Image 1 (cartoon, rainbow over the protein chains, first blue to last red):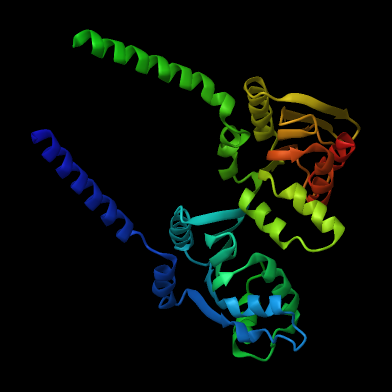
Image 2: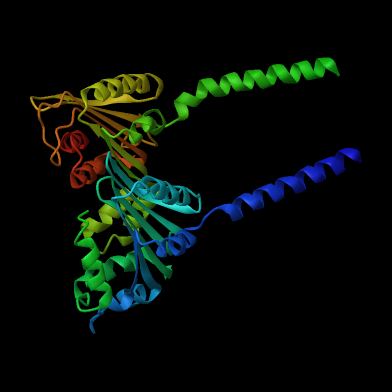
Length: 181
Length: 187
């Protein structure tokens, strides 16, 4: 009887420790919110309305279009000692096993990684993190509901129809004009 | 009681020893070479099976696309390491030798021309035209320029259920150094 009680207590303690750990972990969303206030960062929400879907768009392209909520862009300009601290924060968040890695590229100073959240046939979030030792880093999150990869490609074909007069596009151009990744 | 405990300890130890002996045979090339990924002088590319599965979905309707889909669907990971640094290249060469000694790889092709020294190894798969791993080691590159660099050594590892007859097409598309040799080999 004593043994069972002891085991029970240990189990309880274990679960408490585990749940404490997971709630301590910073999520990407939180990181975005925290960084928004920091002037070293540029944060941009690019709505899908920036892409003008033509009238002759296929139903698949329409599905892809509607499945995307927005693209969240967060960029950090180097010029700061905090670059590696912030970069490490993002890397730590992305190391969480809930993110499935698609590909990564590492060339000394330049790094690139693409991951997604959700499952293969219905992704919730696609995250792309690119960093350049000499220029800074950029984090892009494509957020959506039931995003299907096969439809995404069709949507990319429509990217050339981007509304170049929209505010978001101008902001992007302004910031990225300084960063040439 | 005491003798039972002693027996348990002995079998546990034995199990550990067996496990440790078998482990190197089971690990993929990535774990031996993973340490190179963090080095600034080494360039790494990794494409995971999740990416291949997505590519397979995007496929398309053309005949070429369908072929591509069939081939790509059963791939696991593609890992490419290159470096220009001669010192690190030597270390990688030594690790490659180590890996070849422990893994169940057998040489498929060996090509030496004035451009480079290419060796391709495979690990047997489910039948004669399939392999579980394709390992390519390109060495002694003579001023070959790839993407603006002059690499000293290139290591390519592809794992999964690989159709040898079709893989040449994939590596050709991916512009992997030495890919053209692979295409020749798979014919």
